[in-house]
Length: 358
Image 1 (spheres, rainbow, N blue to C red):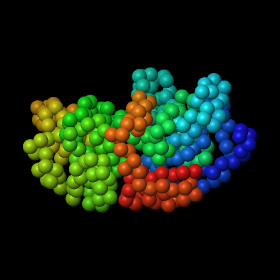
Image 2: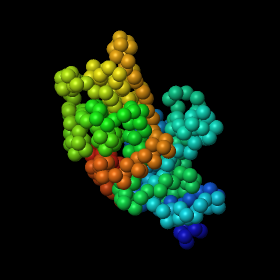
Image 3: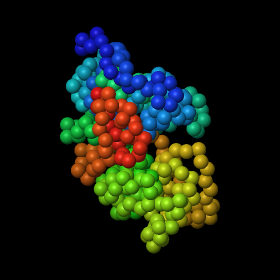
Image 4: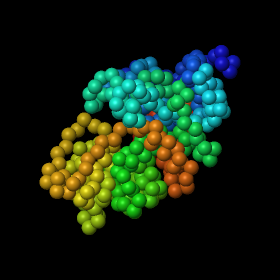
């Protein structure tokens, strides 16, 4: 057995059922041609991991039992045939997408919306693999294709590297909005993705960033302020305070990271002509918008989902620059043996990114 090891500790979600999760001893995966073995140094909990932990039926498509974790960093311990040995020993992050390389989207570097398999707008992309259809990185080791590891500079600590996939989701959303420098930005929803978008927009030189949340989001709104944003509290879907603040200088871009249908309906009133509404949060809710506002104001609405390799590489590059203060988003750190406590911390929503160390 590679490295003389037979077994490793891994966090396994055994079924779709609520809380059906256990720390188990699994065989260390063997490296095949084209693959690399990653010794995991840190990972972080994503909202999708939390939904699986809580038994959300929207994740019944996951191939249970599964080792959780798609936000992962580590070092390359071994490589299979057909992989350049220069990657050995390098610190890397794992890209969870494996493009089908057949559909139009994957061929055009949009693997986050791969069209292989079930062809509906709401179907999870078949390209989303690690932690969903293949074992993920909440373990001591994981095996991935050589193309799925992206090198990270030595100046980027493991804690930051562990959240870069999440940051890449924010970068991908920001890329939808075009020029950010000197622009006024509003972000609804101060969860980990919303805070990541805040950090990215601040690093890119946005003029004014307003982050809006609910009364129970106070801890996260304080993080938004550390990132350089103005924090606002919305109570009972009352948007009057943000409308008052922006009536003279409306925003050019709004990111809805909440997924609540009240946000698009109200945010249209604080967008300037030619502005853009980027939908990041996911729900099955419906909303309506006045057509005259949309047409006469040339308002553009865009959806954004996950990330692609290009955005991931941008997130890694930004991590090496001092103006991108990702570290404020990390609020909790746990050992793998403390996984239940880690998931409960994420569930409580008192902080932002929760890290797990093997």
